[in-house]
Length: 473
Ligand SMILES: Nc1nc2c(ncn2[C@@H]2O[C@H](COP(=O)(O)OP(=O)(O)O[C@H]3O[C@H](CO)[C@@H](O)[C@H](O)[C@@H]3O)[C@@H](O)[C@H]2O)c(=O)[nH]1
View (cartoon, rainbow, N blue to C red):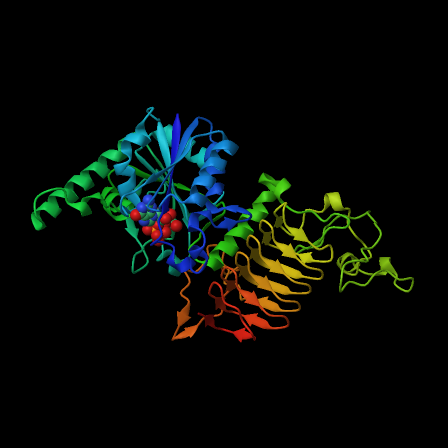
């Protein structure tokens, strides 16, 4: 029997996620159409023998969280419970504090997952590796380039045995290009070193403080207090993956994670991807569909595309142009391009052109002629006719006026460096706002015919003109 724990942190965490974390706890922010931690829960639920999933954090259990837990229990037919820490206990304190709940029913092992990572979660492979050796701690590791590795926990392994010989959390100089993914498999014995850290903290606190239970004793940093301390003692091992993995610290990284998950849906959840259907919006990908021998009537309703005319000789044009000009339309049922998620309650005009990497939330309205790519549009937002939204996140209930353009600058990992990761972005450099994706907070109103470029607009703002490279408070 197995269990899983997801570390969801609390309101003081996720500050780089503002203003989006004002409205919904960061772990519930929709990534590729579903709450961030639903991806974790789906992965855990697929592991045979999974008995229970526990979320540990210090959020007040509010309505969105309660609703999410109820929906998740129903969908996955598993107990999914929230355990609230009385104060932030760090990445290991909650595991020790709630040890009785974790060990109830005697699980053979339990997964521990950071909430703010995007991954294909190779949990079954980790379980197999664990069952071969049964070491107390198994860490999932991946690679990063030299500079970016400094933003993560760095692991030096024995390449033959994969034992972790040395572990440094966010080192100041290069240690290793193997980084900690924040995805672990622990055996029940892993809780003993946590108890030792707790007791040591307790003694240290009592020396300094008045007698009695020292409140700081509960805080345990899994990385520094346990992994660094136990490295090289035959207890911690690393399982390397070259699957998808990224941190979700900022809004820009949520957009990147959304792209990774949407492309994964082609294999895991094709039903979640919007398909181009007659009379529906035009779903565009980065590549035209390589499907020859299909010739359907052109789509006259698609704006900006020429309809076929007798003068045009379709066959003389290359296939991509035939598609672009509406001469060749690949059969709808075969077209799985664009990686677009549209919530079933959203209303999208047939002449809108969407994709790639677009996620449209519940109750969103997308008007005629809208162009939307590399963007997330959240619950209840309205994009009026002919707006253009690129590399942006449109907040809950916001409105973008007709012919307005909302555009950001992507900060994706360098595509020419296979080990590149998302930069842990800082908003400013030399006192200037760096170009990044545009974010509209909740219930923002953008008037018609303006440009909002590389800007962050805080909630409830009603703008009256164009803005470029600004934070609008
Ligand atoms: N329950 C609880 N969760 C917490 C707390 N503090 C942090 N967390 C959760 O623990 C995870 C890690 O949070 P951070 O402390 O912000 O660490 P980090 O900068 O993300 O680095 C960690 O993750 C990297 C991979 O994404 C690792 O490379 C690194 O070594 C480290 O484990 C997040 O999911 C966060 O919500 C806490 O007091 N209580």
